[in-house]
Image (cartoon, rainbow, N blue to C red; front, side, top):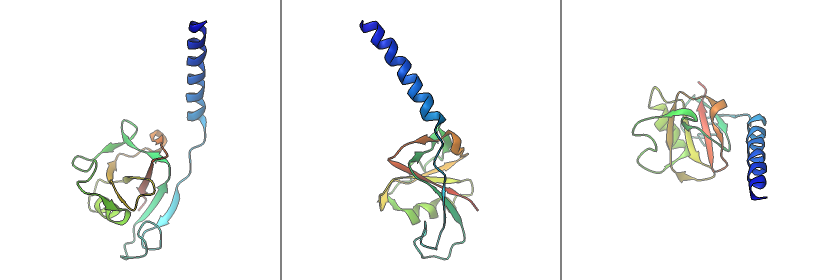
Length: 129
């Protein structure tokens, strides 16, 4: 009996994994920095950022980590994390813990959103302009 349960459980796990991959991915929420979105209303920066909630992009899963910026050395606000990315010409996105005012800031390049993982603890912000 035990072998049948393991076999049946493995099939269920594979089926659940397939269903998770087949589910539609959340769509980004476009926000303009400096208009109450990513920038919080300050600054006057003209860059646009798309917010992808509940996703994580990292090495081998939709992005390449930037050396020395995985994470950046200090905890930052969203605005400061975005500024760090904008200061790096190859930076395409940031990853931050969801819902934290001040927290870790991971800079990413070579971003492929279709390969990022659903992960409620993180949000991805992609530089769109």
